[in-house]
Length: 345
Ligand code: ATP
Ligand code: MG
Ligand code: FE
Image (cartoon, rainbow, N blue to C red):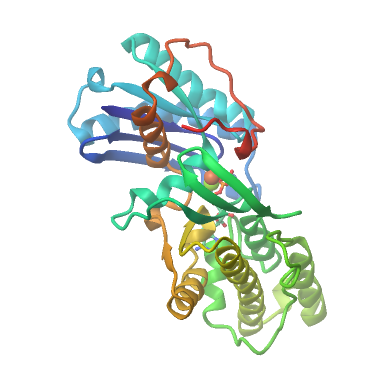
């Protein structure tokens, strides 16, 4: 069965073809980062318009790369939510109109389920059950995953998401948008002893997080060191970046370890954009070697938003239940959609 996946929840248009027999056939992505950069964040209306521009050329690309005519698509999976309403509407209307034209069924996929299952696209696939740390631009959640659609939330952030903390702290250091990768690179040159920033909720004895205080700590350090970011020397900026990255990585690592301990599970899966972070991977790999658990990551290109994870999540659901897809093409998006309200597959 060949499933077309369509992702458009935020600022990436992603399309992909996944074959349940042969695996991922092709994928294509357009990131709008450059367009939103000058505004310092995603502008929803611009995002929707750009998805409209990109969707069909990307569809042609994935078909050409896979060497298939569109009639070979068996089902279409699209991101139904959560995300920006206008952006989601573009993906769902593309998916539903194409499905109507081809007389194929459609399936709305939960964006976070896409992230969560994306490590199963890698060559080293974890088996169920496992603990998942979802660290993206909008979410930070620890989950117990017993199967497709069988997710138990153990804890989550009470305020900012990890990716958001990376982006906001990077902005305070004058690093542009989205600043996650930039602050991570800068931190490589920083002195770990220069700034010890707080580790929020490290000892809270639950699986929740809080990162807004960490961002405020970065702001305070910036203010104390030179009043304006332009007056702070590169080395000091790197030291602050290092202080920030060490703090957030420590908290994420410690909470993963305690979730594994609490559940007795030995497999940890990382998903979402912050899962691409080098320091986080190093810290988790070291903990895994020491505490004898295994840690799995998505391929780097599938950490942030992409169509492959949506095609894949759709395919896994359809394999388990072909009736999950419908010929009802009236699309309804769900901009707010908690993951624990999802149906088991
Ligand atoms: P959500 O999936 O919660 O709706 P999103 O789709 O915007 O949010 P993702 O695409 O999964 O989030 O991830 C984007 C986030 O990942 C951004 O905040 C970005 O800064 C962060 N990020 C990407 N690469 C890195 C990195 N190497 N280090 C730290 N953060 C990173
Ligand atoms: Mg994005
Ligand atoms: Fe995402």
